[in-house]
Image (cartoon, rainbow, N blue to C red; front, side):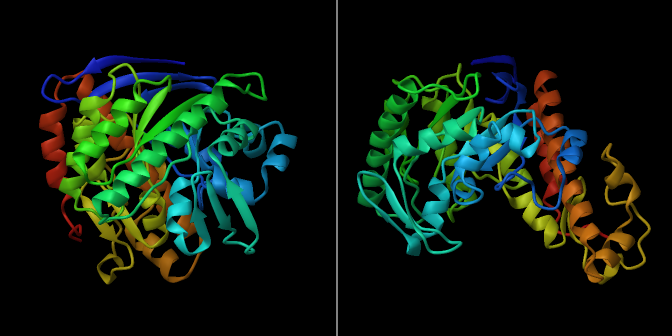
Length: 378
């Protein structure tokens, strides 16, 4: 693995980097569309290629339950199984186990949980999750961690952070004592925890940075805390993290969140927001958010967003898309999803360009003014 910083913004910590993986290079800052079960909901891989997606995020927990790691290994790994030949990052499932609190029990050994599909009993350990991701063959593997909600008592946050460290050590040992199954190298990223306690975040990442991880994630945020507190925890984390390793902010977020985190030095992002909100009729545009079901768009012949250099954004009218949503047409979900991901990839591409031009902070301020409009006027 190699990661190198190729440009920095002098007015902030924002940076452009190149992360080399076995399935290609990723130019950062980059947004990873969420393909939980091997597919981005309502969108085929061909469209993702056309939009410029550099990497997909798939979920080890969901793929373990269905279709099962043995099926994916039979196909020769996740890339061949889903027909995606660019990089893939697999989440360990720690967040899913956090969100399914009624179905799981955490111990020092790992997590025992019941499937949300059929109620069957399963057990994840740090070592087992590494082996699972070996079977999946993802380019970037995440360690198993303990994620907690907000607010959290300090002693609860400290206990979860300390267990995350112990699990990270076990994950690293399992990674170092095993080999890839498909003939190409995989990377292992650690995850920093600590809730909203700055000293816990520092302690966690300082310890993790002493070990041989390929990258570092900032986990346990965007779980209900105020945005400013999240940004504070990102700043605390970035201050500790090494400049020569990629930094990944997990599960974040809105376009505003991404720009604020890029300014603070984050390189990688993922979130279900652009695709989930698209399926519910909310569109992100260069002029702010809009609800396509709103009656004001009934007679609008305006394209979704003519400022974006993508076919769907320039050629599908708001009036037509509203009609498709109200009629319950599958095309409505496809077009809205494609547009929202087009917007996210455009935003990150613009951010990289502005960093290279050393004008990121000025551009970010003007962009935020546009994005903070809650509803576009007809």
